[in-house]
Image (cartoon, rainbow, N blue to C red):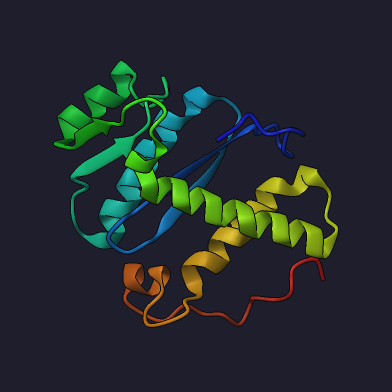
Length: 162
């Protein structure tokens, strides 16, 4: 997602959001360039496979050049991952990732308005929104609890901006 204006602290202009459809967990990374997505995706897949003790079987992505590069295709082929590229201009084919991004950005806007924090702190707001989303659940186990199979520690959560 991006480019984001104003540029984030640290020079990031893009946000990579990866969503796991089975446990509703998401990973968020701030990127300086779109090309950084391939290396971050590789790291996220490694983290997910370690945490879930299973192999990633399928990646669904839009047709962005950063996702359909030879690097990503070769990585998926060598890892036994099926790469599915959705039809251009059909966000409904990648609904889980799109919904995750929308939910995160709604939380970011709410935090920004509520706390009167400068736009340059989008990265911090996005990480906070993601942390809240995966740790707090309306019912049953939240995504974080599903990932690590224990309840998350919520003691450090405070009202944002204090």
